[in-house]
Amino acid sequence: MPLARLLALSLAFPALLSAQDPTTPAITLADAITKAQFAQPSVVAARGAVDRASAQYRTSWGAFIPSLSINSSYGTSYSNGPSRVNQITGEVIAGESYAQSISNSASASLDLFTGFRRGAQMTSAKATEAAADAGLIDAQYQTALSAKQTFFGALAANELVRVRQASLKRAEEQLSVSVAKLQAGSATRSDSLRSLVTVGNSKLQLINALTTVATTEANLGRLVGMDGRVRALADSAFLVVTEIGDTSVIRQEAENNSPRVRAAQAQADAARANVKAAKAAWWPQLNLSGRYSYNGNNSQDYQFFDSRSMSLALSYPIFNGFQRDQSIVNASTNADAVASTAADAKRQVDASLTARLAELDASRAQIDITVTSLQAAIEDLRVNQERYRVGAATIVDVLSSQEALSQAEVDGIQARYNYLVAKAEIEALIGRSL
Image 1: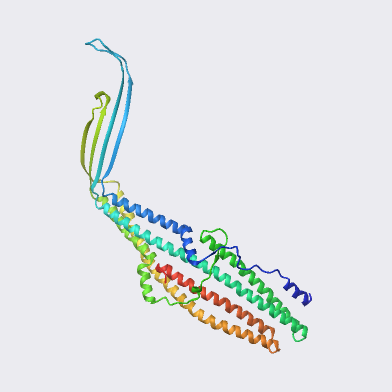
Image 2: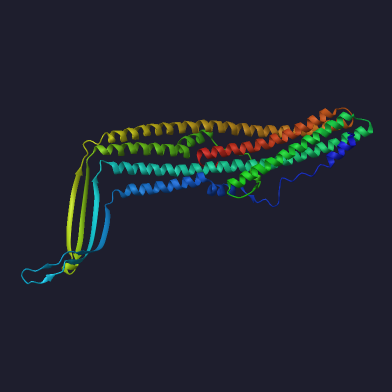
């Protein structure tokens, strides 16, 4: 195929879609985090766990309050038996009878002693509530981390599109130079063919970048609970690299106040309280109850009579088929497992924090390096283009410089967003913003 036709085919390639669609809704990072925390099932479930734990604590507190019930009933009865004769008066008395009765009663009951079970259950419920609160904070920060990762991924994808567009423009300009030099007889056909291949590769890279934009924006839409693609809005604050403070203080804060650690420790406290509640079955149970009733019927012209009763009951199961032992064993083994999980959670947070801090330092250093690399790549391309123009460099030198510049731009984008993601991961670990 003649070179002129190859060049015409390249220039006739349909214009690629822009990464920014004006009809695509846009969202800021703060709004993305807020919407994600209302849309994500993990946060919704964590809020439900907090409500259940609060209800459980109220129930455990209510066990110290007497139970009270009020009952009222109205009844009728009818029977149709054989007639009989009054032996004295000779009067015939009908066998059928009809009666009405009304009954009202109130009863109360109070456990006076339960072998310290109620206190243990209240301690367990309070610890469960603390675990649920910490779990909600952890779920919120984990969701915020996912929102930031997806948001920054969408921003990086759009910036990568601009890099690929610039790379394609440079490749097309170089193709024009190569063709012009070929027509002037100062370059070979190979130069133009290599340039044409570079243009094709640049277009493929741009298409892949646009595909990544569509994917990341669709994922962002799903995360924030919106249909279709959602565009991430850039902010100049994302370009600022700041110090996060004393890492030893952050490490101590993570080990003591990390939502994940707090939740695991509270669950361990609840499990230990459940052991005490299970051991309460070995103690006698003492209950006080009372009842007051007010009854009347039509045979007494609805004259009401009251009755009162009170009882103090002591119960102690001598043998219940080893069920108490089984409950204690179950609670104890569960407490050991949960305590082990709590200790491992602390170690896991420490190990994760070490990795995230190392990634943050590496990203910060990578940002500095990519800035220098980008400046060097721009200058190297300028020099090689000028040398190629005067015949002192080959097309391979120019195309290599173009590729190096494109890679430097990509590395710069990745370094910046790697830093932001590493910082967000640290925030998720310690449960606060840096």
